Length: 178
Image 1 (cartoon, rainbow, N blue to C red):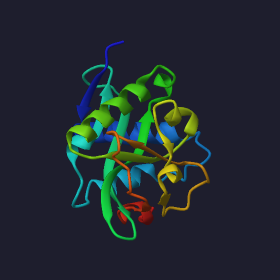
Image 2: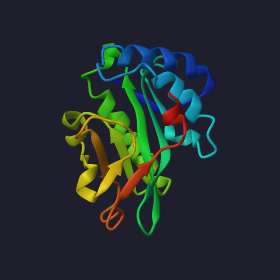
Image 3: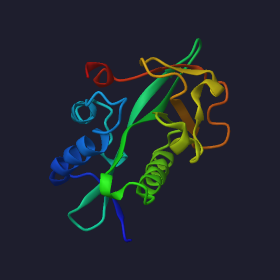
């Protein structure tokens, strides 16, 4: 199985929207707002195209997608900028084949190279925990979104990256508009 990981391009947008809709359709916790969220995040001032990645099986077939967006952790005496992963999606026919893990690894590498210290995600501990993500509360980091208990996860990208960082994760307004 030969896959490529590429920065998303405009011609990919339609396939990305279709893939995300299909991938999240069976997810009980989904409100179906993932596609509008992506469209809004692309308009934000701190959107970084290199942190929006597609996985392709052929030159034209998008089978995976991930977007990292800067978020702020606001503590009592400081603020820190990290990244939030939303969404990560794999085409239904490609799920269970390691595509999501490889895509996540690519996103983490890009985040590290861009100088970010950690990635936050609201997700399934079974999937993300096996890939080094832990409960954000372990670092005294809390989520400002109304999410299920135990689904706010985080991964430091370098040793000690989250030492003394605790606080509340604040999201761009695009996360609240949907």
